[in-house]
Length: 356
Image 1 (cartoon, rainbow, N blue to C red):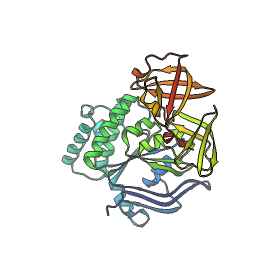
Image 2 (image 1 turned 180 degrees about the vertical axis):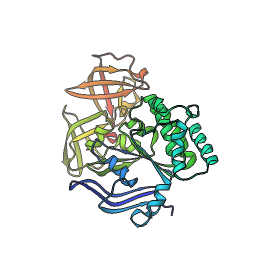
Image 3 (image 1 turned 90 degrees about the horizontal axis):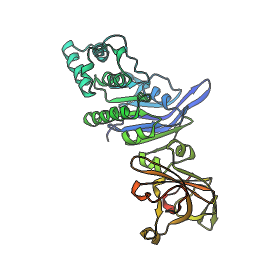
Image 4 (image 1 turned 90 degrees about the vertical axis):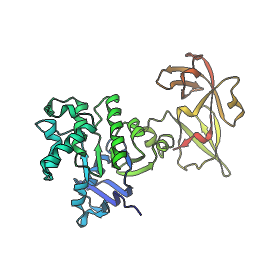
């Protein structure tokens, strides 16, 4: 059985007698790209600091690269892992000097330092910056240099505490593209903290969502996006439709009632405390007279277009139906005939509804 790179079991961290991290079980396999998501104060940075051995934990077991860090496993963990913070923390001197620093600390020979520094700079497309002063770099350049420094000694584990948060979307996407390629080529394991769920969808194979220091969902990004485990997760992923509802039971059958009087049967399991329906905007279809969807078992509702927001790939259409507002995402060609005030009929499958 392949050993895990990171494994936490029953790990608890207290600050001022308050429990701030409570990880019952979390394991990361070699080569996984894992995003850690959650609201401010959820415990994301605390988790990374524990994994990087910057913060002690009071209870539990942490193993890195198969070694218990409490029983002599710290040295191999420090040699095999690297971390980037929100600030690049570049020192005075040239870019070359900054990237060479981890190798000098490890007493690499000069010839090997030069080779590995230039390779790392080329990897992140910043070899032309080698002899520029680090303090003269732009934000995007500094982050690329920071990544080169973090990976110059070829660690197996990279921990990223929102280092790209201050960059614009294009710069973040470009850096994440390069990092994802590097990770795949080198079988690098990455734990990434990000508040931007678009970055998570783009980069990660898996998302671990924290709230109150605990794991509340751990799944593929698409599952977390479309099937949030709680209202907190639905808010985090910016779910298009979070609709207040009531659950009524008829024998073993659940009837879901929305505020506009709309009701439908729910076939999947229904949480006993459910008070809202989550429905992605692209799961709602706009019907027309010839639509083949009319012959399928869908929930349909008539309303009026309250607004249209253009977008790349899909437009957002706000539909008002008896006081209920639905956000629909549809390709531009499907909504060309619609304007604000148009009457419209929309439909969705109960199977697309996630109750929280």
